[in-house]
Image (cartoon, rainbow, N blue to C red; front, side, top):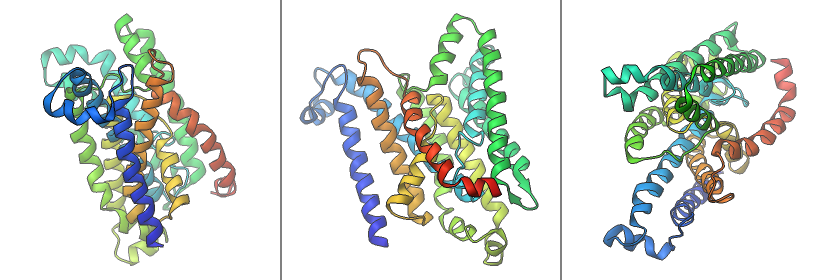
Length: 338
């Protein structure tokens, strides 16, 4: 069994390395792979494109993909629900609302407190993501256990409310804010810069690192909350660390890249199918898989219709939508009986 896990992890690591090199090389201005080390060390034609545009974009894609996929794996373990996902249960929706509120209403506040110009969107997204997750969790709690059906319905209702709120904010927005909101809600990494990366990457790391230490408690939690408690797991602490960590990482990711859905649902299940459910490997494997998938999705989005750029959220939705329908068919009986 360990051989399967190690093989899967090795394949993901090598795949991510290859995807990063391809993403740095391919684009409207092609840079041969053999020239990348020379440009980074000695400079030359194409150095600015590589350093200023592509490297921060690829790094942000990897960080956002890792946060969404790892967040999905943790939420599925915390809720003991194979359909849990940052997008489906409202984490991404709350983060989207927070970032959108900042785009519309936060500019005046940023004039008074300049440091909020960089940190404001991520902070607003985190607070709203945390509030949305706590609300959905409380609504789904029935007799000490989380109801799958209620969880999904609460997530659907929250997503609907957020959609209506975003529509109202679009109505209030001026032309510049409207363009920003429209592009941002579809998801995209075209605005990646070293400045935005310097804000989002530490927040994503601060959310993700504690989640990686939840592997053994989540393995025990599979047996049930009562059994996990008797085996020495502080169940409520695990839940709080998981929810706060996911809210922080996903909030920062959504603030930086907009609405990118389904990675948290697709990647953990693909890893389980390839290797198995052990969270000691599932959590880092999901992070690697999410980074790999989003780097490739972003590469596809900016090259398939070049020089135009397809929103990367559209690409992930086209991949994740059919996969989610398959999961509903596979787990339909469990959802109906929850």
